[in-house]
Length: 127
Image (cartoon, rainbow, N blue to C red; front, side):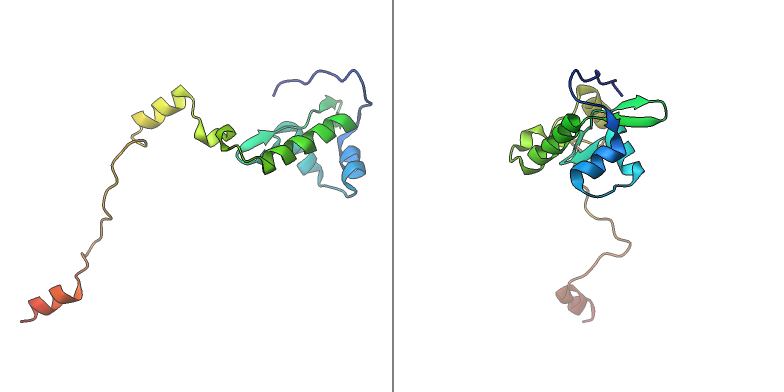
């Protein structure tokens, strides 16, 4: 995780309190921790909340929280699918998938233990 630069404006407040003040309800501390460390997953992209760890607590600003909510909303309503992470793979990922035989392999027909016969074939074998 890259450390966020301390804000020049705004006051650092405990993360859980900012969430409660801004959204009007309490969220589990684990949810707040996840937003700070891993981010929120929106349309296959993670959006992180700018936070600062001071002692044993996470802190953020009202402005950083507003940016976090705005970024999630913009991503959720965006019609531009070209930004989806799943549509773009790094060259190394592409190479590893090809080496593993997971890309561009022909589809095999379903292998069944007993082949199915159509009704006409069953009638022909009973004569």
